[in-house]
Length: 66
Image 1 (tube, rainbow, N blue to C red):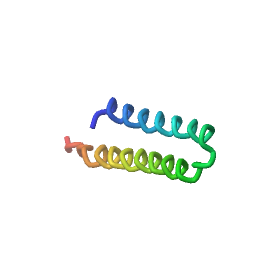
Image 2: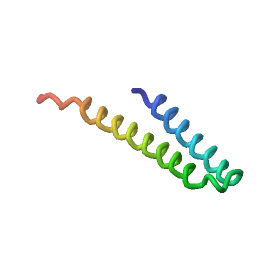
Image 3: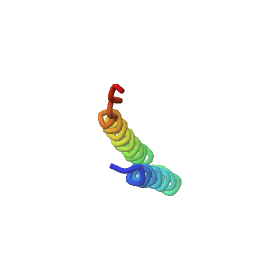
């Protein structure tokens, strides 16, 4: 996955979190459910970023001896 995709994914998750936080103001009686939605978006972002970090680590080529 390229850096652009990582940034797009992070941006999308951040956007969804912000929109859900706005919904709490409009629907305070749904706060618990909306906070679970936010928690899910944050978890999705963490999982995807962890995958990207692991891919970068496994793609590092060792230097060849001279």
